[in-house]
Image (cartoon, rainbow, N blue to C red; front, side, top):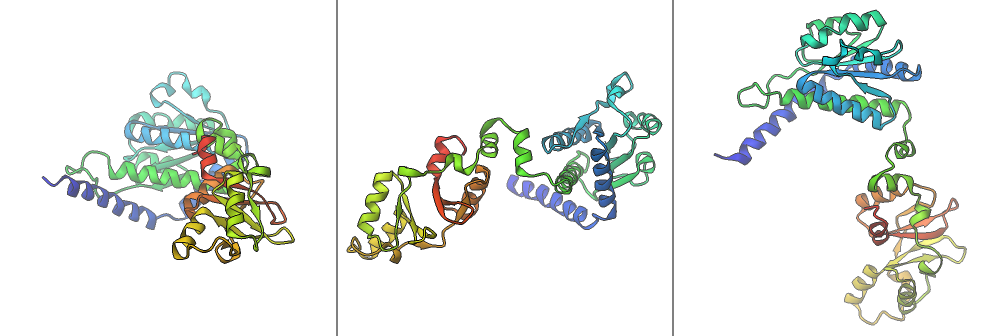
Amino acid sequence: MNYPEKARRVIQLEIEELQRLHARIDGGFTQAIELLLACLRGKGKLVVCGVGKSGNIGRKLAATLNSTGATTVLLNVGDALHGDLGVVDPGDLAIMLSYSGETSELLDLLPHFKRFGIPMIAITGGLQSTLAKNADVVLDVHVTQEACPLNLAPTSSTTTMLVLCDALAMALLEARGFQAEDFAKLHPGGSLGRALLTRVSDVMRSGEQLATIMPETTVREALQAMTKARSGAAVVVNADGTLAGVFTHGDFVRAFQKDNAIADRAVREFMTPRPISIQAGKLAAEVLATLEKCRVDDIVVVDDAGKPVGMVDTQDLTRLRLI
């Protein structure tokens, strides 16, 4: 049996269902975002309900919403009718997840949500289901085929539901103007928390640890400055203090391989002009994103006037446990 081929079949089927989902995102999605915004701006909370596999997706949605500052509770449907409905208040909004839209435990909650005047968003594949008919907004996650070879186990349907929930959470995040600084306040632990709570100015090399040279500095002198600063790069500045470029150990090696008599030539011939830079007040998380995107080892740090004030080395980020 060709197991890799089986895996590719599953993945392809789910990709095709996601493409169908992508094509049918419409005004109903906008209505859902507007309801969610109205609830949160009114200091209400989001109540997520689901059973079985849909309940698992609901747990992930609730966690994502909470992690992005949208107050959310995951209501245990089985316990809801035995006292847990006490967490629901007027002004809240319910997000109901059920692929069939006929999950009996979920339907038992509908009269109570109606009584409280709780708006409902249904995420379902049953567009003519009881849940859909009672919801204020219906988000369609129906699939034509599960990835299960028996077309029974929830696979394509759960993936589609999960992706739609992610889209809902991310669109809501943008609509609320949620920023990296806000994310940092909710994620203080681990390397991610450190990266989000730390500023570039906190991790950059400066003073004697920063090798600063002029364009006319010789390669020999540049290497001496880098050795003294124990750095693999030197910032090249013009006479007025503006950034001219960066000269790295890699620049030296590449030039030396072509001509081993470069020691007394000016670094302007070998430096990298217009290097990648970042402002000192930015979050360290932005450094991580830049390093990953641009595949560099050093980033020049500049002030508000664009003048170099430091440098961030990937080795420092490792030492500080930011990566």
